[in-house]
Length: 295
Ligand SMILES: Nc1ncnc2c1ncn2[C@@H]1O[C@H](COP(=O)(O)OP(=O)(O)OP(=O)(O)O)[C@@H](O)[C@H]1O
Ligand SMILES: [Mg+2]
Image: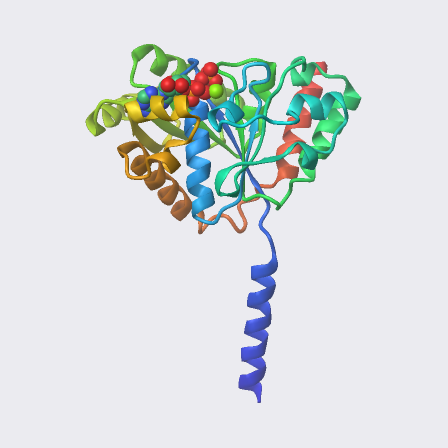
């Protein structure tokens, strides 16, 4: 009898565990230098996550310059700018892309998000809060460099994906970004993506150099996430407005992005349950930074 009760108890707790949704993880995607492949990587990486059964949402925060919907060959009805300016529910501005991927386009007509007045900021945060547990991963595709928008998002996120190419100017700017993060949010994990590499050795050399300098001068470890090859297929995919993981699934670039998504998920599997990340914890930090800025 007690055996049966044990089995029942185990079954019940397992189904309770399975029905409990985990809080969403917020990832800021940034780069020092512009045009290095943030949007392309974010889109293809989240499609890989979707294919692996993880729900992802991309929020294009490069307001005015955003292009997630262009990369997908779609036209969005509403944008994040419309959400704030017209007080729309975030659920009404979320668009559906391929593989069930969700995204919100950047739009235009929004001043720097955090130069918004108190009411607009509160409205924005309430909308973001309603996303909790509805997505496994929420990506903020930021503009290049640091402005008052990206600075706050970067420092409040649970993880930072930092994109660079092997070019020295791009690597130097990436280092500047890591230094800024290290000084202001030392615990924030930084994942590096080296895009447009000529060979695996080219990628490894870039990440080794950057990793060594970061370790020596800042005492900070960075994690390697992906080396994405330079390939005409990416350019073609952008022209055809079809993400390469879908239009060219057996290309080297798709292999690299899919592989990095698999490794990323395998790492996270053990730490997702109680790693303290949630939309709420993100918003709490964000509000603190905004308050500080307002003085
Ligand atoms: N691996 C690659 N191989 C070849 N071309 C690439 C690769 N990655 C990106 N590109 C090219 O670089 C262009 C810019 O990429 P993308 O728009 O993703 O950069 P970004 O960092 O988001 O730019 P921005 O700073 O303007 O937001 C793409 O349109 C594509 O043509
Ligand atoms: Mg971009």
